[in-house]
Amino acid sequence: MLEKEKIIIIEKIQNSHLDICVNLSGCGFQFLNNILKQSGTSKFLINVEIPYSINSLEKIYGIKRPFVSLYNAKKLSDFSYDKFSKIKNKKKFLSIGCIGSIKTFYKKKGDEKVCLFFKASNNQEYGLHFKFNKDIKSSRKSQDEIINNFILNIIDKFIDDNHIFNIKSNELTNLMSKPNEIIIVEEKLYG
Image (cartoon, rainbow, N blue to C red):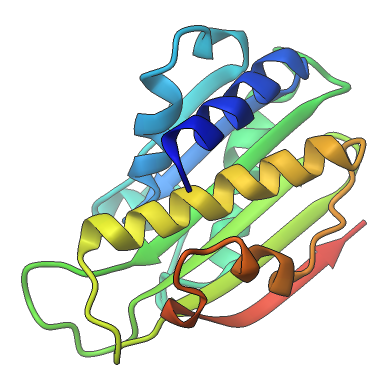
C-alpha cells in the first residue's frame, strides 16, 4: 500500500469519530508506527498495550499456549474493550487484538502466523487468522507491513460499510501487492 493511501485511511479514521484501542503481541507494530506518525491520532486512539513476554501474556492476560490463535487475539481485544469502551465513545468504539509469530533472527520451528480480532461497540466482531507462505523469502519488516495493511484495510472497510464487518478474505488478499505471500487459515464474522 502506498504511503498516500495509508494517510487517506488514517484521515478517514480521524474523521469517523471512531475510538480505537489496540493490543499487540509479537507483531502489528508497523500499524502503530503509521498511525502515530500522523498528526491527529489522539482524536481516535484511546490506548495501546503491548504484552510481549510469555509472563505478561500468561499472568496478566490469561493467555496460554498455543499463543497465536483467534481465541487469544479475541482475549487481547476483549481485555482492551472491557477496560476502555466505557470511558469514551459508546456508539463508535473498536478494540483490536493482534497476536503473531513472524520472522525473527532465528529459524522458527513452526509457521509464521498472525491472528487479528476486531470487536466493535455494535456487537460486531471479526477474526482473521493467516500465515505467511514460507516458500516466499520475506523480512520481518515486510511481514509486519502486510499486517499493517490488513488492519488499515479492515478498519477502512468497516467505516465504509457503516460500522459493519462485511469483509471477504479474497477482497483483502486482492489488496496485497503479493497475494501469494499469505494464506488465509480462518476467517470468522460474529454478530
